[in-house]
Image (tube, rainbow, N blue to C red; front, side, top):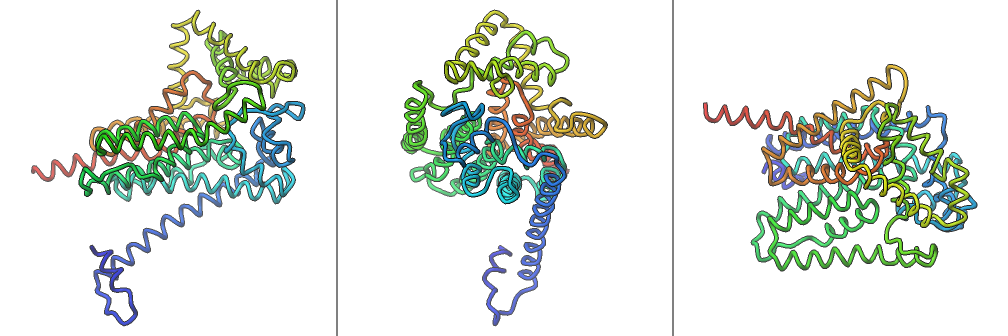
Length: 452
C-alpha cells in the first residue's frame, strides 16, 4: 500500500506524505543495493578474464562456433576435417558463431563482446533467482546474502566468463532462472483467479520448451514443475491445452533440427549425437576404481575422445560421429549390464560430486586457494541441500519448484562424469536454496513468539 501511495503522489504539485517518501526512499535504497552487487559481480568477472592466460574458450563448442563464423555451417566439432555435426544442440554456440562472422575468433573485439554476453547471463541468472525466491517468501536480507555470495564469490568465474561464451551452461541456467521466476510469479498471481479461468500462460510454456531445446536435462525438470503446477492449480481441460501447446513448441524446435541431422548425418538424431561417448567416458573399470578422477578422466579422453585422441578423431572421420558415439555407447552399456552394483556406486558418487564437488571439480586445482575453493563449493552444496529440504517443509506449495529442478539435474546427470561445467548447473540454485536455513529458523522463531 505504501508503494501505491508513493506512485500516486508523484506529480510535482502533489504534497508527498512522509510515509510515501519513506517508501520511495526505501525502494530506491533496495534497488541501489541490487544494482551495486550486480555491478561488482560484473566487474569481478571482467577482471578475472583479463588475468587469465587463455584468450577464449576451447573444445568442441568453440570449434563449432568458429565453423559457423567462417560460413561452414554447424560443423567441425572435432576439428576442420570433421564435417557437419550434431555433437551439441544449436543454440549454445549460435551467438558466438554470429559474433565470429563479424570479427575473427580470439580477436579483442570478438572476445570482448562474448565476455560481456557470458557475464550478463551469469549476473542475470542470480538476479532472476533473487526475484524467484522473493516470490517464495524468503526475506530480503537472506536473498541479498545469497545474491552477494553468488555474484561476488569466485566460485565458477572461469565457467561464467570463458567456457560459457560458447558452451550452453550459462544460457541454460539463465533460462532456468527465468522459467522459475515466471512460474512462481504465476503461481502467486493465479491464487486470486477463479479456477475455471486458470491456465498455463503461453510465454511460460514457450520458455519451458526453449529451455528443453537448450539443455534437455534441465528442460525435463521444467516440465515436471509445470506438471506439479498444473495438477495443483489448473483445471484438467486447461492442463490438456497446456500439454498440447508445450508439445507443439518442442516439436517446432526439435523436428527441423532432426530433419537437418538426418540429411546432414544420415541418422535419426533428435537432440545430440554424443550421449554414447559421454557414457563411455564415465562408465568403465578405470573410473570406477580411480582415486585421481581428473587424471583418469584425462586418460580416458586421450583414449577415446576425438578432441584429444588422434586415433578416435580418425575413426570419427572414417565412420561418422553418430556411428562412433553409438559404438562407444554400446561398450559402456555392456559394461553397465555386467557391473550393476559397481555402476550403482559410481552413479551415486557422481550425484554426490554434483551436489558436493570435490577438489578436482574446482576451477583452481592446486595450492591452498584450490583447497579453499573446493571447501567453499562443498559448504554451499551442503547448505543448499539442507536449506532446500527445510524450504520444502516450511513452504511446500512454492518451495517444491526449485527443489524439483535441483533434484532433476542431480538424478539425470548421474550416468555422466560431473566436470565443473556440469556442477555449475547446481551452484546458483544451491546459493539460493541455502536461504531455506535462515528462513525456516525465522519461521520457527515467529511461531514460538506467537504462541508465547
